[in-house]
Image (cartoon, rainbow, N blue to C red; front, side):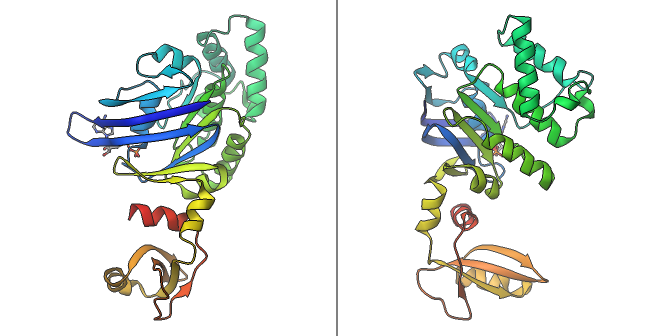
Length: 287
Ligand code: ADP
């Protein structure tokens, strides 16, 4: 299985260029698309999911030309969009049975079996008769994964799934994602570095509509190892350090600020060598 994105560009009618010549080759497993708000992630996800067209470029999945063969792609697609509305007065079980019918699972007994298995998989079986309107954020997202998995998709897209979840819900959701098969292409779009760290064996960083970094998280971290230096400073010193060094991130810590800078050599001035992490990779690419 292979998703090939070639030279995709998109400008919205208001003049915003959301994608600028994006090319990516994505194979089986969990792929992380990491980028800040406004980077173009949802535009790219919606284009892959056949919900909108790019102005130029092409997307090929397993022999399917996504723009020309939308129905073919939809048959193998599972999609959890960023904005995920639910019918408030329908139960999870009813809704999943309904979606299964739309997706062409004709035998009632087969639909029932499948929905039962999915509800168990996403740990909602005991809540199956509850209205979706009464579900918590985390339950809604798990329901969203269940609906995306109906029909045995070969390509699963989840767009910013953990934004707004509390830490326990996020952990539960990520555990669920990690259990989806290795033999399909799963794209996780997110601005949360830890989600990619925990789940993805391959990733890209997108900023301003362009792919600015690409690789597996471990290699990307290795590339900047020995080049990250940290120092605790006062908040009012940030601007001075920013003008002198390539400052990539600053974190509040115990009333002060810890900054990370990128430097090939020991900058002196009380900086300590820091163990590089994916956060350093991310911020050094989007800064
Ligand atoms: P992300 O998902 O990374 O936050 P989006 O793809 O939603 O990024 O947005 C990329 C850029 O395109 C942003 O500047 C956003 O404001 C703009 N944008 C997104 N959708 C539309 C639209 N329908 N019309 C006009 N501009 C849009």
